[in-house]
Length: 589
Image 1 (tube, rainbow, N blue to C red):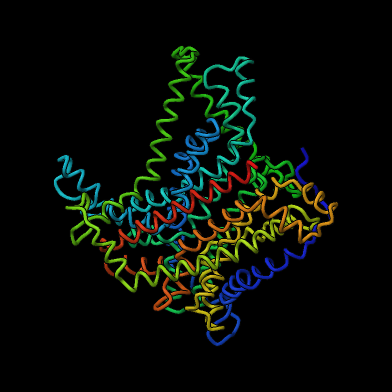
Image 2 (cartoon, rainbow, N blue to C red; image 1 turned 30 degrees about the horizontal axis):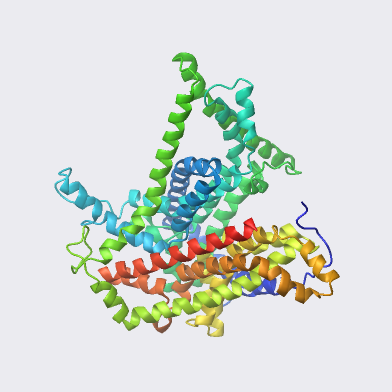
């Protein structure tokens, strides 16, 4: 059935406020910050910042560490995420929906809550050390925290949900008939998977790797909480350049280096595979340049060779050992898949839950297991004007962000789906750019812009910044929902005498109401969880809850943080589950 049609009957002007908003709140601060790289304190044009950046061994070493941590995070995340994504994509619908919700909860859970949970787990008197000593495996607490391993484990825990969701989106486009057809043509054992399904899923693997790597390059929370000076990331230097040194030229140079690193990753990916693989397909249109075409062909060959390479193992085992094809083998493989996937999902969910029993501890310090159960730390949270004020401000900012993001994102998505707009792909790329550009660059640039107009410390200024980073999530959600809407309902309303505004309010919006609420909730959670923008724009009497938690972690780690983390965890989990259920109900309609 025809669900939509491209027509000039729908106006394009609703897109203009969204583009104007991003131009002022996102693109202007980022461009201004990068321009400061080439301007000295006297306002003269020079390259001192860039020369200092590349001539100082410290910066080169930190950039190398950043790539090293990001690369290991990407590799481990992809290897652990693939079985889970495969299970979600190939299991029946009800089970798949349940598994996706279990993955979405840690995806949206606050990074600060997860980081605090890992502090509890890996600390000198943390849960893991306590367990190992109770089992007499070790005699003294092991050094688990402030190490490279702690950073990698926590980073993988943070990034893996993104990898799973990206691969699931691609795997669901693979026709399930193809592997079965290969089996009817004589494919033995797991040969149909390795020769058919696995090569077709590799674009999703590559897309997931790209998104995880780019996100990890601009990450700072876990390295700052769980790493030592040897695991310093480039974003941590950027924070110090602004908040400690107030050196805008250095901040601009570091931002430019981070942006160039991100751009190089995208450039190599585009040349090897084509950015169209982000949607789940191998690019059929290689670069018009000869070297670009060769790189694209090489990338295609790499994907094909990878599939062939992984099929050699089962073939050799079957030929050398003589493993017969049997239904029992398939059942064992499926059981192993379920076992491994459940273990990975448990790894994603359980660490954050450790904050709940710690919050109920009756003692004075962070201990696991708790010495006794008490609500004293929840009472301390509710009795603290500082914490309650920060919570209230976060709710106010998140609500404002949700409203603005939903209005701007829905309007932009409406135009992209229904209107005959020129340059649709370019516009979509611009709308999604805040999701691609490292958030730290945007936050520092926004801080510089706000300092000129006196918006630093303004709750409305924080909400505007949060709207810019939440907007891509709303656009993506609305695009999926609008594509399910049958425009013939509008045509019917028009023929019955309704104008466009009436058909919008009485026909379209009631059909998509649940989806709009879901988009609002996702934007709300994005704002409520954000630390990067709040780290620079809020503070003092305008601290948001994440900003207050960040300060408390470094000043005094007490069980009240566990109580706050528990409240945040319960709130975010409830909103994500409600939002996902509403979104799915709208899609089914």
